[in-house]
Image (cartoon, rainbow, N blue to C red; front, side, top):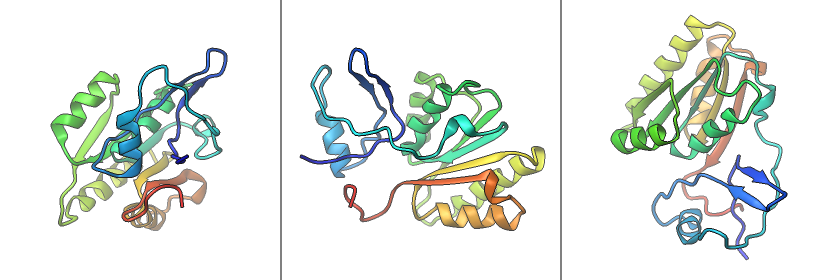
Length: 181
């Protein structure tokens, strides 16, 4: 049996229903597994695990991530305040595809920054985070997605005076890591 982590996801225990959003990127084990899923096929579920507690976040919130973070954005909708005073910033491989997916998910107040192989887009991400901080000094940041990007962004925000209590960081994946090991 293979174990895959998807966080967060919606569970309704009574009918035994699980909903998750998966990014089908390449031939990674999780993408291959998700492509083979079929409705109404039983699977074993562990969790949900305690990760970023979205219910505990004070507003305003800026959620940064990549395509693997769209599910986290959806989970914000399940919090008592839903998407009120939440802004989303995603770095993505394909602007048009991502806009289409987000439109279908009814996600609003979203900035998309196209990923560049030379990494030049990171300056745009930092500038967007800093603008949010300037307009709302009490903003709480949730940084998710690729493990390599998050430490740099966290350091930049801390250097700008963001307190650790206003910063949540959760890597969803790392280059070269396969599975949960």
